[in-house]
Amino acid sequence: MIASTGDAAGAAALVSCCRPDLALVDLHMPPSGGIRAIAAIRRTTPRVRVVAMSGSTDPAPALEALRAGAEGFLPKTSEPEELLPPLLAILDGWAVLPADLLRALLRPTRPAPIDLDSEECRLLRVIAAGRNTLDVAEELHVSERTVKRMTAALLRKLRVSNRAEAAAVAGQTGLLTE
Image 1 (cartoon, helix red, strand yellow):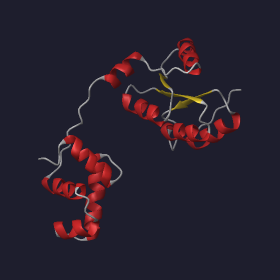
Image 2 (cartoon, rainbow, N blue to C red):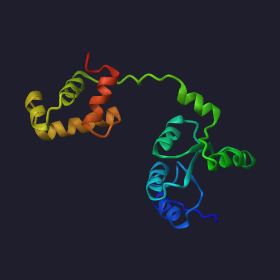
Image 3 (tube, helix red, strand yellow):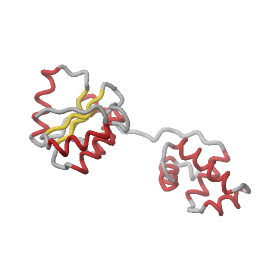
């Protein structure tokens, strides 16, 4: 059986209903996106093999897809006859990645430098120390609302979603020792 859906929200429901052996997921599908679709498929139908596909050469989305539970990644630029062997390998239980993506993922990486001003560094140090919003406000001599605004801006700049992740980034990149 072959079925398709145009959005991420319907992907998990479709896979759960149809129970295919293999699901191809476009990482750039309409909201909420292919990564969430993969995670949802993995939760609802864990035995289905998931292959992420993208036309982008950026390895980051492919890595996110693998972390979300995809067994493989294939470029959308592949010729149709080039797709059959990797898809069969995935059905046999193998993980499949294009060679250039595998090399990019295995290349040693350094955390990207993060350019913070002195106020942001001070805020990050206080957050990393585990202080709550009221304590941070008192230490920085600002309102709690200002602390929340500053913290939200700092989290965006660090590309993290919470204070614990910000503290981890600070420790990994050496921002706490400067």
